[in-house]
Length: 281
Image 1 (tube, rainbow, N blue to C red):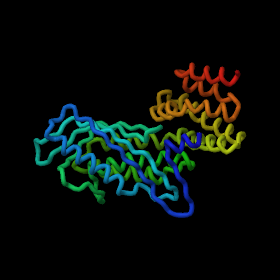
Image 2: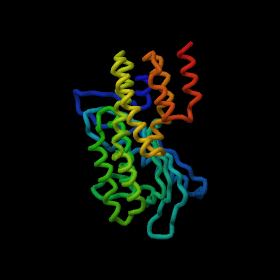
Image 3: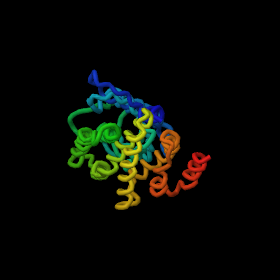
Image 4: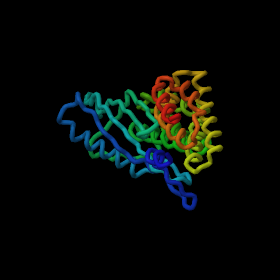
C-alpha cells in the first residue's frame, strides 16, 4: 500500500537538503467548437503552459515531492472582438488521485509567441495556474504533516487576491471560496494526515498505531458528514480511498473499521461485503 500511495502521490522525502516541490504537468485540450485555424495556437498554448509549470517553483519546504498536475482544458470560445485575443475556457485540474477542482469561466488573453511568465502582478493565466498548483501541493503537505499546507495555502490566496481589483476579476471570488472551503475544513485536513499515518504504520508493522490512526481518520470523516453530508472535498477523498479497505483488512487482520466505512460510503456496500466474506473464509 505504501508503494500504491507513492505511485499516486509520488512522494520522495529528504531531510538533508532543501528541495522544491515539483509539479509534473500534463495538459490536454478539448476544442470541439474551435476553428481549425486556431489549433496550432492552442498547441503552442498547451506547450507554453507545461513549460511554465516545469520551470517555476511552487514551494520550498524540506520535502521533495513530485506531484502529477493534470489539466484538461476545455476551450469554449476564442474571442477576437477586442484589442486582444481572449480564450474562454473551463478546466478540470487533478493530481490524478484524490484531488479534483473544476474551473469555470476562465478567461485570459493569449497570443502565440507571447512569453508566459510569473511576475509580481496578477496574470489571468499564470496566477490561476499558480493557485491550483498551490492548492494541490498544500493538500499533499497536509497528508504528510499535520496542517502542513498552511504556508502554501497562503500563497494560493495571494496568487488570486490581486485579481479581484484587476481588469481580469472573473472567477477570483469563486477561487477564494474554494480555498476557504478546503482550508477551513480542519476535520478533513486532519483525517487526511491520520489516514497517511495509518497507512505507513500498517506497512511498517506498527499495527496498533495503525488502528489508532485509522480510527482517528474515520472519526473525523464521520463528523464532517454529520455536519455536511455532501461536502465535496470529503466525498472526493472517500471515493478515492475506500478501496484501500482491503489493504487494511489484510495487513491488520481485522475488520474493526468496516462498520465506519460502510456508514460513510454506503453506496459501496457490496464491496465491503465481499471483503468481509474474503476475510472470514
